[in-house]
Image 1 (cartoon, helix red, strand yellow):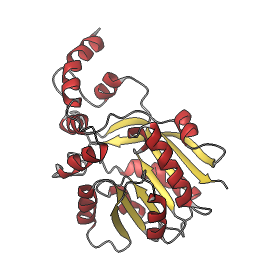
Image 2 (tube, helix red, strand yellow):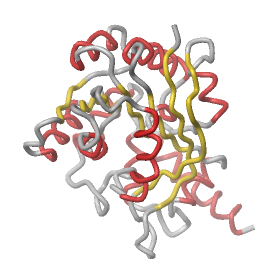
Image 3 (spheres, helix red, strand yellow):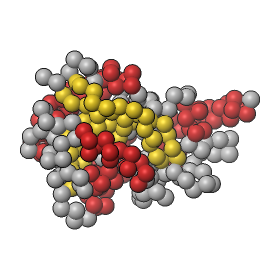
Length: 264
């Protein structure tokens, strides 16, 4: 009964916040990143917890499945937290994001890291694969975290087609996505929203960004057609978000990971 009451209380607030999201997703992402003043565990960006525990869970699969001699492209890099980490495992890490402000922040936060750079690119756009292959110098590995679940199906299909051309024969894709199976109210409650209010980083995402979905095994097979992709590994993952409850611990969101190679 309490959960039902909390949902009813949250309904008008969520509706009001969601109504502020720009219709154009490019505008939404640029406005969001332009308004960010601080990042990291105590910052304003919901998914930027920078948790070593999450990185460690990915590292085993990345080292097992991706060619360490190739560069890696971090699609949807945001402020570059994971790009900088990937730069420690690959000869070059290239972070790409649709938002100019995200790319500028990523560059500023990366200092003089010699093998990391950032480009403003919409990886779902026509021609993106050629542009990124040129930047990487040929076949490249790809890292995606929390990108596919905020794209609609047409955008997901375009991104998969571009990634197929980008990885070529030698590159691989590693993805990690949120896969929370409850409804919208259960999801925001899981992240700390209740009748008393909505935590700041969560509120900022709700009122500024496209509504997220979930991405798991079924969605992976739909987006990455088995006729064009070989699934190398998959399994459950945990996406860690910034702390938003009194415990001070990172918020743990059920997720999914997969590693894939292009066929043909």
